[in-house]
Structures are given as structure tokens and as C-alpha cells.
Image (cartoon, rainbow, N blue to C red):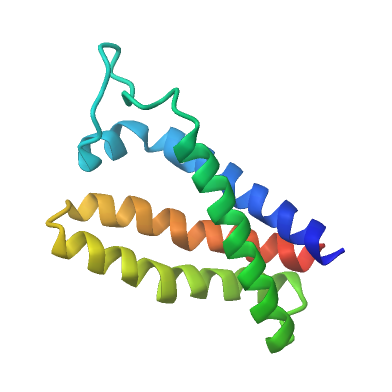
Length: 131
């Protein structure tokens, strides 16, 4: 049962990212400096590696969050949501901000990617505690 909840939570986090980056696509593309094709879409759009990496990353995050939740007795939807928000906002996003600041990346990119980390972890935390 634990494996299925981790898998479902990882897929939910990945799906949230699809929505997040679809809504913020033009702002993200401008801030990230990703190479664009002649249609204005990311040049690597058809490359499956970023999508596979993102899905596997979300599943790994869900697995570690499940482990932490088990050790910390986080077992309700409210606790899962709040703990996920905390993990994203206070553990993941500061690393993103550090990397991007030293890399002289735009502040808007920190907010977009940090926002995904924060709310994506919240979604993962919620799903983990619902299942």
C-alpha cells in the first residue's frame, strides 16, 4: 500500500507541475532563457528526458516525504498539506533560490520554480495522507 500511495502522490505532484508550467509557460520561458523553436515553444519540447526526470523526481520526493511523515506521525490531510507546504517552502525553495542567485538567474524564475516546489510538495503531502 505504501508504494501505491508514493506512486500516486508522485504522479499528482507531476500533474500539478504540468498545470503550473502551462499557466506560467510564457513567463517561465522568458525567465529561464530556454532555447525556443520557430513556433516559440521550447526547442527540447519533444525530448522525453526532462519529463521522465521530472516524474521520477516527484516520485522520489514523495517516497522521502512518506518516510518523514511516517516517522513524524503526519497522518491527516491537514497535517500532510501543511507539512508539504513547509517542506517545499523551507527546504526545497531555499536551495533553488541559492542556486539561481549564484547563477544570476532572474528573480521571477526563483518565484516560478520555487512556487512549483512549494505547492507541488503540498499536493504530494495531501495525497500521501489521503491514501
